[in-house]
Amino acid sequence: MDIGSGVLVSIRELVEKIADIVRPDLALHFDMNLDREFEEVRVADLRATFEMIGWRTRVSLKEGLLATVNWFKEMVNHGTLERF
Image 1 (tube, one colour):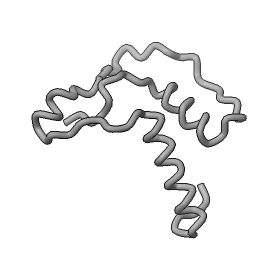
Image 2: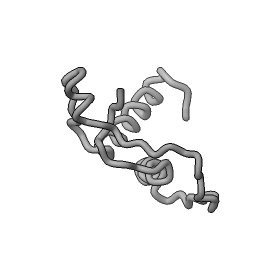
Image 3: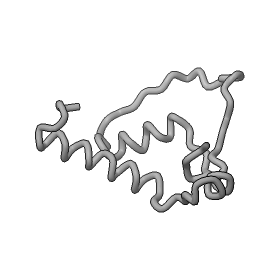
Image 4: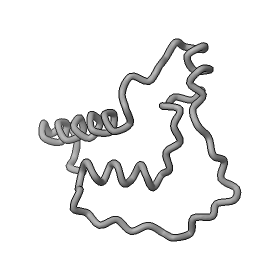
């Protein structure tokens, strides 16, 4: 079962979005080897997921990442998690 937004997001885009939330001043460097001929590209099938469990996306990727980062920061501040 695929859970997602139905929009393809690359690992690079995901890393850039997280870095923008956590450390917007951080300069990111990526390996330029972009050709991954055996990598399967998959996008969540929202219709199938809804039909199986009734689940729909309710927040954007950016909103979800921001909420996740804020949750981790709160856990660190309360001593629940080691500093990351």
